[in-house]
Image (cartoon, rainbow, N blue to C red; front, side, top):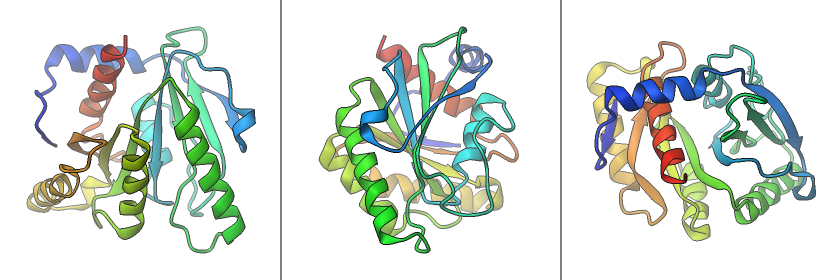
Length: 221
């Protein structure tokens, strides 16, 4: 399900995006500090979201790799920038899994270190096309999410909101939450005017999400 001011994704775009993601995705790099980032290859998209929002599960669903991004029942497990690419296949696109935010049990010093790493990455990565901010469809945009959106707005980093765990909502609630989220972001300066509703469990919205990424990649050549 999509709420958007952009044109719908047609069958040709969805098929092209399926092919874009069908190759052998691999983990290629992990960075805990800004001077340890990998060389820039092709274009990058980054995934941000609260701890336990289902970020790793969604990356696995996009790439059809059950264990590409490690999932955990322990919030705050991802503490570094993790890079994934189709090595030796189609290397136009790199996926970056960013550390989860908003987990209170993590020490303040570690949170500060993560925050510096993320801000430095956002400022200095010239091949970063878009950040996908994942938000739990059951809860909508929380204050901690709003703070991240504000940071991206101030940094003028293009981002798009993607709702996760959409299968947990009834049909009417899916539509309501998608539209309510769109209303929250439509006036933000760096927000792309589209909200996607997804589920890594059922595959809902995954073809459209791939197509959205494919469209951004095509726009950046």
